[in-house]
Length: 182
Image (cartoon, rainbow, N blue to C red; front, side, top):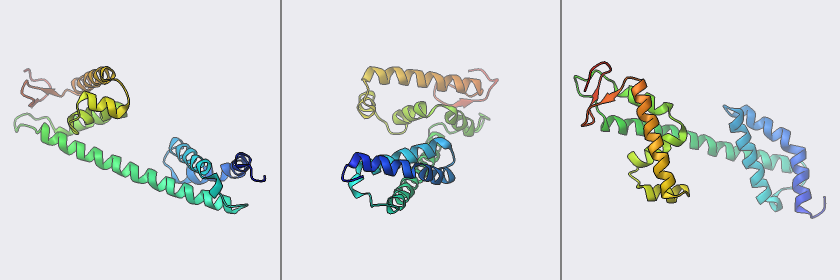
């Protein structure tokens, strides 16, 4: 191998890829999560190729990197779930049921969870974070017009999903049960 970092990385990759992949698969809920963790592990190994220990110690070093990557992924998933619960609570505050409405907020939250991650994130940035289109555009690295279009489409899909679930709102934002007219 010598001192060539590319050759060293390639050798370690060939020797350890299957073991690191098996380690990640046994610890992840989905094959995609495992693949992401393995990719991130080897990306870190590539960036830190000069820190790779020699021989079998490289495999152990990679196990340590993979363990930290998986821990980061788990913490991120927990934060995501907490954010969803907080958003559900925020939506409950915004769209609290009138005593006579008969429509539970859980219906709105359930419909919201059926949206794609991108739609939920975009709607959350507007409703929950209070960001303006130009701020979202900067954050996402897209044009303000792209945000306008995506937001319009996300709102339309959310509205359609609420209609399909039988959740409707009066002009002032109060929910009314399915079957009652405005």
